[in-house]
Length: 90
Image (cartoon, rainbow, N blue to C red; front, side, top):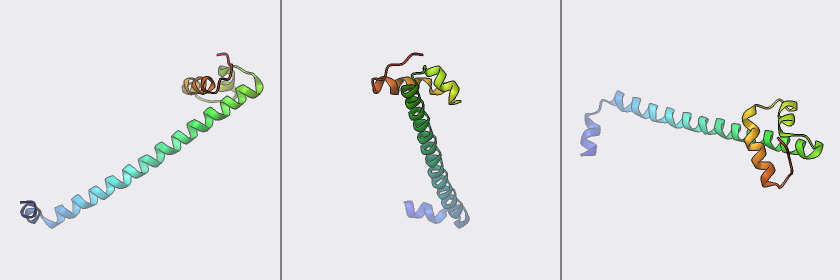
């Protein structure tokens, strides 16, 4: 049944479907690379902020401001501080 259906498909349509499938695979791969890069950057920013807070005894908000980080990192930073049992203030 499958081979009969495949024979009825125009070779150009079959080639186009194959191309689109390969294109989707490439896009998924690239999307994964971008996501991994962003996650690595996020972890790096959080690590730098935690080390800054620990070394200079500053608040989370001061570290975010001085390091020019987006406010969206606030929760990640406080979570990491708690995980490492580092005393901090907001």
